[in-house]
View 1 (cartoon, one colour):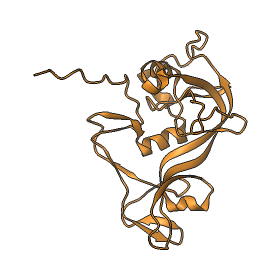
View 2: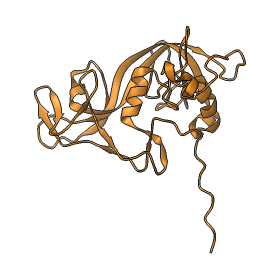
View 3: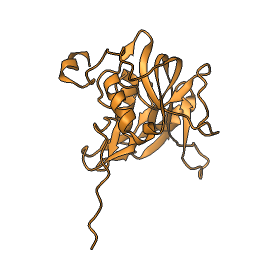
Length: 224
């Protein structure tokens, strides 16, 4: 009998925004009202009054690297927290630090147009964790771009849209701007920022010495 092969190694550290296999994302039973959809039980809503799912279960099992915890992703995006350590993301006079996978140049993943603005669901990062991520994350190891971004507008939500009657219309995934009235017919699970005024940087430039400690290091607790 052949012994099982080694288990895939985990990213070190596991990004704080990922969902774990022992967790579930729960959407409560919904109703349609004059102001949009609402839950018949407890609800989680953001500052714009938009509905979000609930997350149950411990952060145990295996990290689901391709899936973000919707509530942690929202917090990281709203508060400019590092998606790896959930401490403060690196911010300089040139803006906050973002690291994004290199676009494939296809219709689905075209080159970035910074004049128009780049939409992303990826939260920012701190410099220390960014350097780890580009060496360990399978997506980023295929190619990445790092930027200081001066403008990072909270722009839209991604999630599930629940159409009003007629009966038979099925929910579907979509993106709506935060100021779109139809956003009130959605359960959001990702917050979107529109990034503009980006300055490309080399993460390993020795002149980038600020924030040398990880964002969640005890020495930085007071800043988080």
